[in-house]
Length: 273
Image (cartoon, rainbow, N blue to C red; front, side):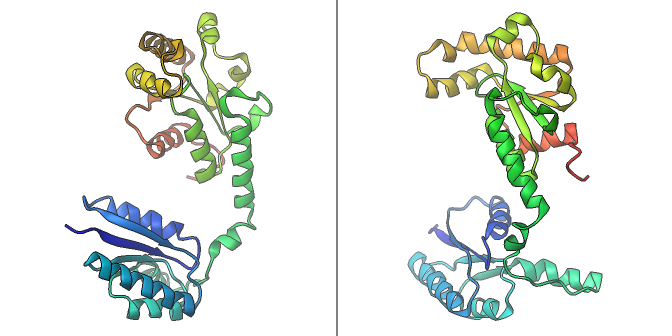
């Protein structure tokens, strides 16, 4: 089967089109080449996009697939009429039926991210990212009362990427702290964390996988030895059980799955449910 080109066309960043399109394409085991065409917000740019899409179809020998979130009807019609492709207009698919159901005309506004950048929610998200970076890997104990979530676990168990995902995707202030041998010797959580136990969530990982990850960073080190990884994971899990901290193993889970589980367990007040 020849490779098929998939285009994500938007008058804005294209994030919505790409996220939705990738979720749909993940249901099919087929090889595709992804092309992002953001900021297609004029008729001239639409004609350029049409030429690029049709050229890809000629090269591939198969019809391209186009996911679009275009709002401007004139720009949209250029693509719809000019593209020799499978055309999937996501706003047309969902917005128009909702207009009929709600008996309300949608805003049909282009580039909503420019509005978002001026909103309080956007400001809060940037603040959350800065907070998470400042409180990564136990760098700071300051202002922990502001944290929505505090992740704990052994080094390289997935705390940093999960913290940043929670900040970027949900605007949550997420701190993370590594559990280290000194904590195991004391058999107690880091003292700075004790007043915030209700916000804490633990991440663990299979020792074998942890050893593989650590060997990529520090090959042949004591830090990466399987025996040491087994000890750290065992001690960390025992500490979390004693402290009543909910936790999960990240070994086979994506960042999205980890974050979703954390949100279900902790229900941060910043989020509306």
